[in-house]
Length: 221
Image 1 (cartoon, rainbow, N blue to C red):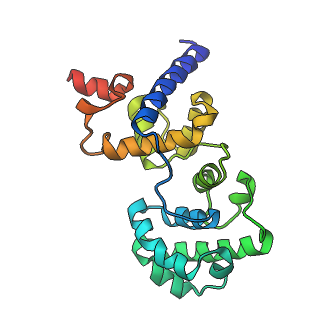
Image 2 (spheres, helix red, strand yellow):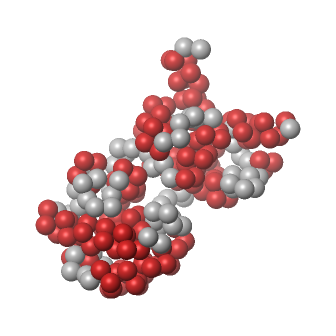
């Protein structure tokens, strides 16, 4: 099969999956709770190797004491560590939060930058975190968030065979409509939590079963 033909097949597959999941999850959005772009940035830093539920249980107290980078930049590491201890890797995360806030205050006191290059220069911010901020806080579609759910589902469905998150993102960006880049991740994450559960996928009730390579094989067996 020619490369162009394969790409068109993936484009049609992604389009149909997106249409179905949009119907299933019309209100799909970021699961992290926040009031400002800075708070979303800090919450996303905390979400590394941690569930969104746990982050949402942690951030109310954190944001009550440090509602913005102005306060966070002046925070003592030990105080931040105590507040975020339950999210895991709390020492590194606390350092990232405080150093990130300091840089924001030094370089971007009037508002967070809105480019991938500038955001990923902040401590604790990789491409995934930058994509979350750009897409959900600013509505800027520069990339696709690839977390553990998106990585797992895109491989199971048959949208990619890549394992590296960056390579998966680059693959998806070739055939997922750009206006869906932010929503596509949310759709897959919600589908992964509700139906395509890692240890016990509910293939028999899956809305996208006929478009899923793994699901079709499971049903045939």
